[in-house]
Length: 147
Image (cartoon, rainbow, N blue to C red; front, side, top):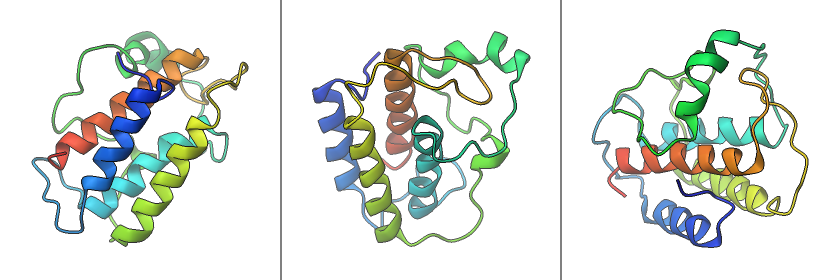
């Protein structure tokens, strides 16, 4: 599984985000492109300890879902979204694209970081798992919009 901490994967994701436009059409799902860009910021906010969204430790999530977040199996289309990451309000495409790219750069700047705080819902992830999880999530949503 690729990791955002790998320079090639980071560049690939950034290039794919740059291919998005206000007119990018979804291949599946309910979110418009601006909503998707905002949605993807949520997992970065958790990783970068900017927002825990009130999440509490969840033993069932740890046991049954955690490994799915960073393994090689792609997420299936129309997978239900966690309530705290659901987007229903319209979002400005340019603002959300700029914000996501800034968070992506911030994550890339953390590539030498050794210690990571536990995820509020899933518990501890290694640096490699954080990078893989973020790559997999972005890859899923970029494919959702054909890039």
